Length: 431
Length: 190
Image (cartoon, rainbow over all chains, first blue to last red; front, top):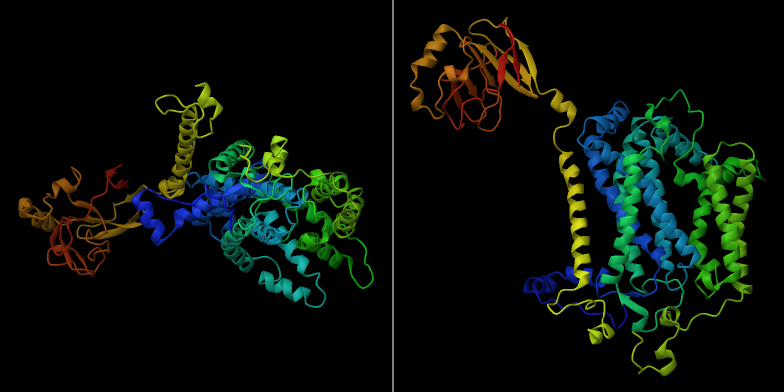
């Protein structure tokens, strides 16, 4: 499960020896994030975001469990208990602001994590399963975040719940009964609020479970790296501890500075003022948008404005929105290029930087803008490119592209030469 | 030193003769900063479970006792717990004072358990000091126990007319909360 040169756990302390025999937890830690896990020596800071995502999952679970101690999932008092947390509970404001901004930071680091995976093709063999599990985690995160946003029972909570469950109403024939079943009523009310709270509490632990599978799957081939060249020898790797514990620790420090800058100084910058108005089923806010992390997908949903063949526009939008994430499940088989890193793929790189990234930025901006021109037309163009990129451009590029020459090994990429490669297997390692 | 520099690994870099590395300073500084940060995180996580501001705001209670006749008791609520306010009859006062306080399980005189000038006004928590049940004897017609004060039905503790434990498992007298007469007829508890 690891490279043959991985250091073995040899506890000298008798207590640890006892523990290692009965329940080898220290050994698990040693082999997972300790000196017993060799990692490519050339990882950049883009490889920090997995650890950061795990950290923010923990932040969300800890602050969320605390908030649940003071919150009541009842439509009569939910809004009032949220204010009770803000005003009466000791440090309640900190817990709630950390939880709300923690959700945003969780998505920021996960998006950077996905970006890393897309540019360096981390989804390719032998790491397909890691990628697939990652997409599952992302879908679970979206569901959890949506249901959590309903809980304060403000105006955006209520109308968000109504609009998102309304997506299911687009399904032909059974759509409306499904929507009513999901809400437990004809509009969001106590039944919906209660089940959303229950699921919002449950899903993070499901995410934690899939995260364990994600890491387990990762530790079989080990991390990819910026060259995309697989580890060949010991000189290509460094032990996780202390090298990457230190590097991740530094990244964590930066992330915490940014996170608490938001929590303490701009706690509501990413939220909507309308959500400080209690839910009112008789009045929709003038400009209703989801949280920023849903904007690209919201733009795809709204990009479909005319019916096509037998499909009403509403249904097409819903299919496209779900499809925009589901397409990631096929990515390992759509991109057939044997070269992983975008650094060695000149054609792929052009489409990535000048096609996919601008399309995502446009979708992000349009998703947060009102549904009017020019945003609708821009969303349509960007949506078209988005699907074209994954379903057409990527398979073709991977066939016709001539990749740049790859370094022989990670050692060569780092040091400029790989003595073992030149002198043979018995030469002293370069370091 | 030149030799050690040439073969230095991160584990031994900057090592001086006595085995101290320059890197030790960074290690200690980083771990200390993380430790202090960790404590700063633990403090609010512990503190949030303490009573919130609205609970603390309800922690004093004012009661008008003018309508309590001798021999009668009323129940009020103080910090979500029952409070017994009882105006003693002269006979009950005499009965309480007749006991040698030194022989009791929790030695206290009636005077020590009431306010000066208001010796007939007995204010106690309605919470048995054994395991927290509400004793009987405050409401009309309830059993008052063998000593004419309060009787706890849970495990049979008998309190006398001064609310002192006389028989049964309770360890101490019924608690007299902190209170004061804000006027002749109004008391503020807490």
